[in-house]
Image (cartoon, rainbow, N blue to C red; front, side, top):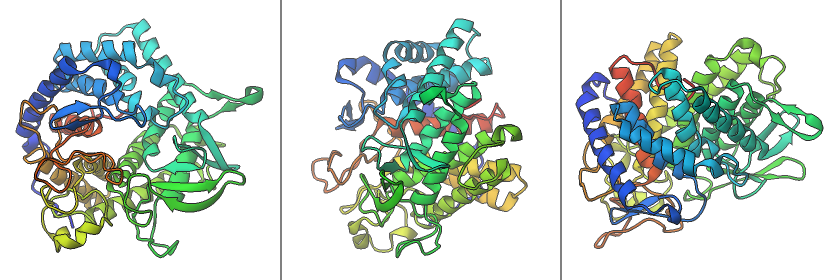
Length: 463
């Protein structure tokens, strides 16, 4: 169980954050120098060098997004120029990609960050450039929303690359591109010129995910533990009925793949922040499986957020770094592993530091949201839990200090069941490697904390 440190403040982390972005700049330049774009997108490292792995091209936005975040944190214009140039040159296929559920990863990390910086005044106002970013996000939101499986008249989901029967936990992070497109005044045009409200569609996806991918301890099945998350839910597309839990990257459908859990933990609090900023009348007439108005939706998503946050705190080792799956069979050989720090160099099961980086951001956002609502006790608990994890990630053995290693966040796991991750010589399990999503989310966590510590504008995807 995570031992929350209530003495850490964002300001106390400023030296570590400065060091983080010093290292990040070195890593970004190393990848830029060595990477051949003809190979596709860099995905994860092997022996410290970034390589690719064909599944879907979901990490290219993180590659250039890292450069944009580096500019945001440091003001070094060379990183802005690089991120902007590559976004314009290489990211267009991701905007119109009809075959994936990853628009919120690729396009919000690039076009979204660039538009946000212009809105904040960190990039000089340029109407043509602004229109370009806005159009990309509008199209991306509509294309993502069109990848749709209805399961009732007021519920459905953005389906995955596995097909229309598949709902992933990950995809909650793509709801934000629908949110941005809606904020920009866009709709999805369907058959017979039907105008599909992107806010409604995003909310329907989020509610379907909450209902089928998140557990609440209500006896749904034998493994129904409050806050547990299943990676994938399977439906009969002929009639919309739910069939079973599944997992592509976890150990089993009846355990919790911790990065899938972290996507949920990050996705719902950021939606709470966005929805809080929406006018009440934007919810008028929306059909979301019986949820009534803005307050009903906020209450529902808050319940989801707190359930998964509590599970994370209870089911993670004391330093806040989870193993890759809560049911991984080798955990039984680690003894009382929940009451000691995670060990990335053990012989039985790998940790996944990326789940920690993603989850920490969710805990911090949830904590601030609750503090803003007057719940100082719970808000403080979640906020300090996020800071506790962040401090651990900003230290060895998780922060990569080796200039020859292109990764920033060490001990990332991509796909343990498929055995895709590099196992160093003399080791029995994967360790010591990085991934583009891990590096990006550590930088995003760092930027969030840097802005809080310096009393700068609070960082959200919709600024």
